[in-house]
Image (cartoon, rainbow, N blue to C red; front, side, top):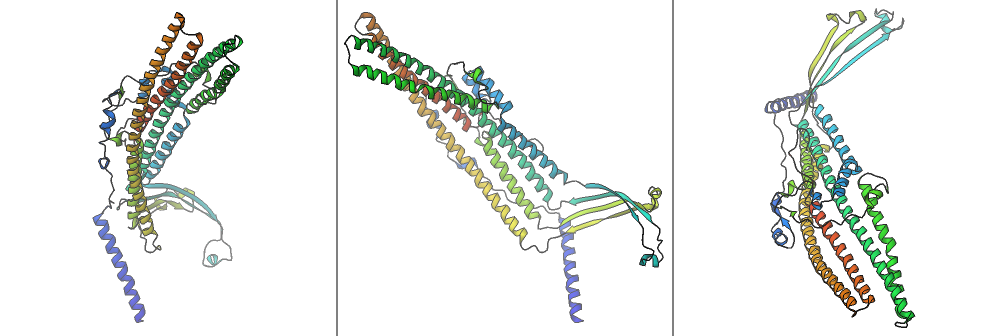
Amino acid sequence: MHTHYTLDRFIRHRIGLLALSLTILATVGCTLTPIQPTVSISDFNNEWKAEYLADERLPFSSENIVSNWWSLFDDVQLNDLVIRAEQNNLDLRLAANRIAQMRAQLGVVDAKQGPQVSAFASVDREDISDNSKFAALGAKPDGNSYWLGGVDISWELDLWGRLDYLFEGARQGVNASVFDAAAVQVLVRANVVSTFLNLRGAQQQLALLAREVGVSEETLTMTQSQFNNGVVGKAAVATSRAKLAHLKSRVEPAKARVHHFMNQLAWLTGEPPQALDALLSSKGQLPQVPKSIPLNLDSELALQRPDIMSASAHLKQATATVGVANADFYPSISLNGRTGFEAFNSDQLSEWDSAFFVVGPSVYLPVFNGGKLQKRLKLSEEKQTAAALKYRKTVLQAWHEIDNALADLQSIYAQHLSLQEAYDEISLALKHTEYGYEQGSMSKLDVLLASEKVTQEAQRLSESQTGVNVALVTLYKTLGGGWQHREPEEGGAL
């Protein structure tokens, strides 16, 4: 008896404490706000910029990067290919679909914040046994129908911010998907431009190779003539033939390289193989380095690189998840109600005497779950830490990529200037050789050999020109060129 009394007092005491706790928590209505780790871009040294921007050989200007930076190459066909890629590229379409999915998910989460209303209706036909206990108690054994209809209403009171954190996490998921799509757009545009530049470079290389083959064939003809006249021996003829064969061996790989770049552009624009061959087979001019290269590095890098914005959104999403995990420790309180009509006769459903209602709160409080909530909170906090590290890594990687891109551009542009000087000098040497041939002091073979050297130097210069252009594309890609940050819209990012 004493044991039963003690247990009864213990249970009533615990229930009293629980009720008091719920009253205090409901009155205070506190909202948990986990601390969000932040990483400042100023943590990273950016004094290195002056070293490259001070190079007067590069035509940099302090203007902001234009959104359509590829137009600096002044090529109508290139502009058209970028537009095609933006409309048909499958990676961009997948990214857009991902945004649509995340926005739909946001709508699902948002719907949970309001009252949930559902309708119900049923009709049951019942006929009890004449020998059942209910019949023995006086129930009519005749069959009857039971009609029921009404609505259920449920509304979770978000006292601890759990639903708000769920909504914020979903919203940041939308933001991250939008920024990820912007990063894909930057990459696709850069790939289209660099592939087009490589194509024009490969086509020019193929044309120069054909010219070199022609010069070599003419040289072989003259060498053969000299051999027939006893001027040179068989070794000279064999050397000329070997040289010609070596040049011809490079033709098919050069054609395959052109074909590869055409197909790559077709892939980027969402077209099947060879779909753009007719359009791209015309040998256009290799674009030159723009006379002015807009490059303003004074603005905050985080607003230039969508991948950094995506990492920031993922960090905020992880922080919201920590908030949800914290709120799960507190009771879930909902207001529930049911109202409707019930009757044994369908004709009576419209009468007020058939109406009923049930209303009242419900409380769910986790008491024992084997430490699941603590472990879930720990997992959320570790994911938040990982997201913060990912953000810092993304920012640091961005600075490294920009630094490397500037160094590569400076190096290859310096090389290009030297090759341009070499080409100018070898072209001057050809003119002197041709003049000597006209004066009779040099032979036709000397002219062919000098012409061959000019062609070889033109190939190196063309390759260098392509390299400079592609290096510039890489620089703009690392800066997030072609994407402009805008403030988030309600319920989404861009």
